[in-house]
Length: 383
Ligand code: ACO
Image (cartoon, rainbow, N blue to C red; front, side, top):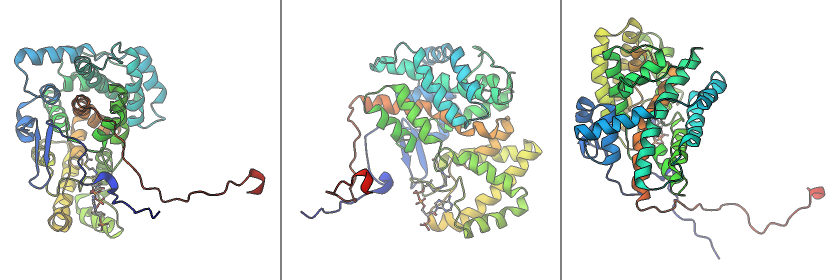
C-alpha cells in the first residue's frame, strides 16, 4: 500500500487547537484584549492583581472580590525552607529559569490540594502558584547576590513585594508602578508556545503544578520569553547609539535574527511594545545615564528595523524588545528578566488550564513516519 504523505503543519502554524474566551490577539490590527478589555486600558487602569483576577475569573473584580484575591496571594508569599534550600543549591550553577522550574515544581509538595481537580481548588492553587513564582524569582535574585532570603511584607502590593523580597527594602513608587505595568502587559497572550505546552501537560489530567512547570520550561527559549535577555545583551554589545546601524546591518547580513523583533501572530507593531514605548519616552528624559543610552540604541534599532523589515516583511518590535531598559531602570538583573516574564504569565497559564479542563481532550497529534520498516534484526556480534 502506498503511504500518502499527509500535509504537515510545522510549528502548528495556523492550526486552531481550542476555543477560548480569555484573550484575543489580532495580529493584523495589532490589538490585544484580556477578556474583552483592550490591553491599553488594562495597562493604564489595572494593577497586576486585578489583571490576574480578570483573566482567571473572567470579569473585573468588585472591591471585595479583589481584596479576597489579594489576601489569597499574600497568604502564599512565604517560601518553605526546603524550597529556599533548592534555590540556594542551584544559584550560580543553573540558569534562573531552571531554578524557577525546579523550585515551583517542588512547591507542589506543600500543597494539600495538589490532586484536587475541582475548579474551585484549581483557582485556589492558581493564586498560590502566582505568589510562589514571584517569591521564587525574588529569592533567586537575592541569593544570586550572596544575600539572605527576605520574608514577604503583607502591606505591599504584589509588584512592590517582589521588589522588596529582591532588594531587601521597600521600592520607590515609580519603580513599583513600572514593574506592575510590565507584569500587567505580560499576564496573558492566548495559546502561544508556553501556554500550549501548559495545556498539553494538563490535558493528561496531571495537575496544575505540572502544567505550569511545562509552561516555564517552554518560556525559557530565546525564540519565546528568553528573547528579552537576548535583546538587552544585544543593546550592550552595540554599546554606543552611533554603532546601532552598523551592528544591525552586519547582523542581518550574517543572517542573524534580531532578538525582540518578529512574531508568529503579529505582523504589525506588538501593542504591548507600544505601551512600553511610551514609558521609554518618559525614561529617556528621567532615566539613569545607562538607561538613556540603552533607550537611544533601542529607538535607533527600532526605526531601522521598521524601515528594513517591518514595512516590507511584517517583522516589527515585539514585547521582548523594550523590556531590558525598563528592567535596568528598576534595578532588575538581566538573569531575572525571563523569570519575571514567567511570574507575570502565571495567571494566563492557569486560566487557560482551568478553561481547557472544562472540556478536556487529551492532546495527541500525529506524526508521519519517514523511516524504514521490516528491517532484519542484526545480532550484536554481526553489527
Ligand atoms: N530578525 C531578522 N529576521 C527575522 C526575525 C528577526 N527577529 N524574525 C523573523 N525573521 C525572518 C526569518 O529569518 C525568516 O526569513 P527567511 O524567510 O528569509 O528565512 C522569516 O523572517 C520568517 O521567520 P520565522 O522564524 O520562520 O517566522 P516565525 O513565524 O517562526 O517567527 C519568531 C516568529 C520565532 C518570534 C521570529 O520572529 C523570531 O525568531 N524572532 C526573534 C526572537 C524573538 O524576539 N522572540 C520573541 C517573540 S515574542 C514572545 O514569544 C513573547
